[in-house]
Image (cartoon, rainbow, N blue to C red; front, side, top):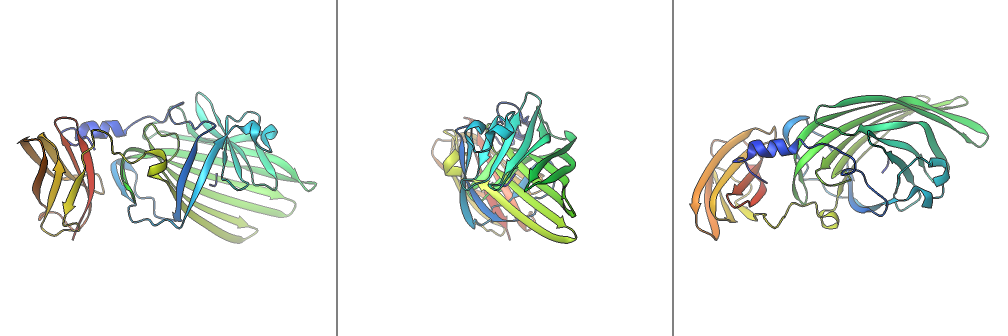
Length: 331
């Protein structure tokens, strides 16, 4: 494939983040389109529970629109009869997928030059899929290209290895489940063999049928000549409404930020408010509870003198259901 409730409820937030990748909630259908930012490869970060993956410094080098279409409407649709949706990159490449009650499969690709339907599809993930689930499968197929048979054979393995919060250039995204897929296969024709190793980290959000972020590392070895392609792409929040600014959202400012010793948190809320500062391992480094606040703009000095230098997530929630999050850099 080319292509915040706070801690008063923190235990609840963590539980919510352990959502299930499911059909149909996380299955794209024909008619959907997503604007994505394209950028250079970034290290995907650690797996585990209650992670904070900080990709806020990523810079887009391009923008693309991806379209999910009916496979029957594509030039090679007849070769992928069992597919339920095709992903079109707006140029000439199609990837064909099949969603069943128990799994999500890649049936093959068409790069505009020739189509490669796989008789044994690549299992990307099972349904349902939960944190710490693992799976493996074989993949393969063959196609005739210019009177020669190209044979594909290999394996795909996967694991849902982490959940937590993403920090993207446009802001924080909560309730994220990470799925890692490794495809290892070879394409052989005549005396030429191409060995492919493709690892993709997919970061899924609750209720969104397309990864919020995906990071891919592809290595290809053709008869000893090795090439590497590393990419990252993330959704455009304006296009899909991913940025979590619900009607119950709390807008806030941290001044100064970056900060040394202390910073002032300004926000609009009322009632009881709980503030938590969480480090990039998901550990709660600091908790403060503000009680019986009158409705309106609030200011609170946050003592961060005990925190080590680094990047943190400041989460806050009031007793009326308002929630929010801001990134904080401590010098």
